Amino acid sequence: MSLENLSLRAQLRVDRLPLRLATLALGLTGYGAGLAMIIRSALGADPWDVLHVAVAARTGLSIGTVIVAVSVLVLVAWIPLRQHVGIGTLANALWVGVAADAALRVIPEATTLAGGIGLLAGGIVLNAVSDAVYIGAQLGAGPRDGLMTGIHRRWGLPIGPVRLVLEAVVLAVGWSLGGPVGVGTVLYAAAIGPIVHLVLPWVTIPVRGPVPAASPARGPAGGAEPAVPGADGARRG
Image 1 (tube, rainbow, N blue to C red):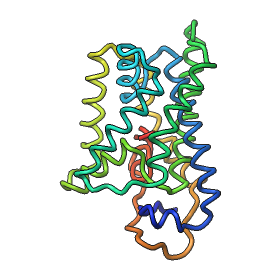
Image 2 (image 1 turned 135 degrees about the vertical axis):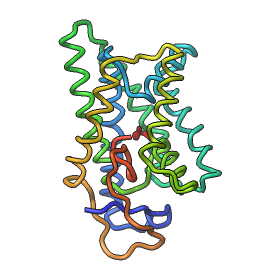
Image 3 (image 1 turned 45 degrees about the horizontal axis):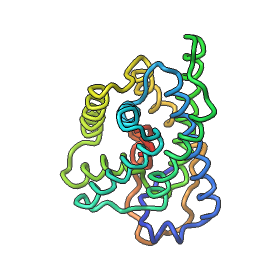
């Protein structure tokens, strides 16, 4: 199993594009729903969602709207990094927030510890599996992971430390604004990478034959999107 770094032109010409688009939509929808479940658990959220929830509470905007707005701002940061925007990049930026808001409307907040644990566990699993499905479509990195891999390529910094610093900064800002940091934050960080790594080989749609404008494959490295499974988002990235 290999993951390709395809340009937008190559993505538009890649084999089985309808299947990839359907897989992309399924993965992003499940990812947004998983985020909603984790948030409703009231046991903490992943670093980026700690920030999203905090900003939403202070501005009166919906969490999904904040997710989309932050995604767009992160994409602006791609410009000096010369990152390639893909089909999945744009879909991730626009759809994860919509899916999260839709799920938040129908999922009530947990009122008991048992309910919270159930939502947290289910949300982490759904989020990770959906992340792998999204990655497996091979249609481009999400905004947040693209920022991470762009910094890696631009300055040659190791991906692991780059991800750690970015998420630590995001978490610190979100926490300072009153975002939901808790046991769920720790469990998410510990579980998301291994689950994505386990599921990814089963859901990846291989690229058949030579692909124009494709660069060397990028394997899983504990993140959340094509370059780095398990990172935002997705994650959304």
